[in-house]
Image (cartoon, rainbow, N blue to C red; front, side):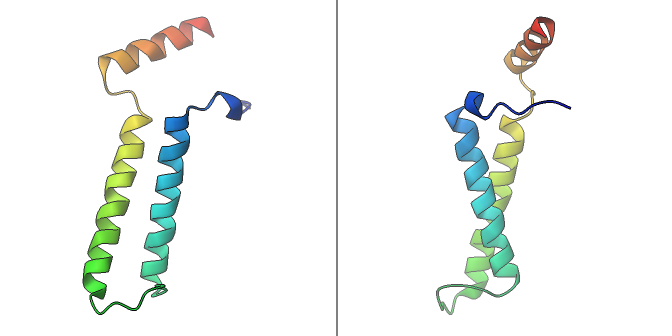
Length: 82
């Protein structure tokens, strides 16, 4: 089992994680009809929440996976170093 190193996590990773958690919480609140503000434009709120969740999820997924040449090269170097 691998040990987590929370001290070595970058600020960007923490920000992406926090934004994703907030988006998912917000999405759950909208799904269950729990909204803090009483706005007549509920449909627009749902659309905005969906877009926010989708963009955040894609951003987090992209940033944490190695799709670019530089990222894949870095993965290779990390694997070689153990």
